Length: 145
Image (cartoon, rainbow, N blue to C red):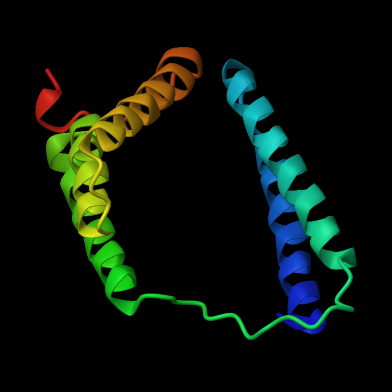
């Protein structure tokens, strides 16, 4: 990226961080833990945006290709669209448990044990942080009573 593009993206990041911060200030008291999480995300985004703004561009960077593999990009976009469509019907956790291994296989990862462990760890983390601790409701799909 050139210096002008870096500064534009960093300014956009700072604007998004400010928006997140201001939006989280209006959270109700019962969602105080969720607001703290949003404040944390806004702070990290602001810090990284400031670093990007002042990053030195003295070294010459080779031209970066935004999409290294068009096939993998298109497969990922299609899989994400299918995932988004499946969530209301299958529920978040079942759709995610199917999406992650299928996408990994479509992107040519062939280590089934690693894929299974990674999927399990990510879903457990999401459950513990968002559902258990923060009380965020997730779509249950066919599992709703």
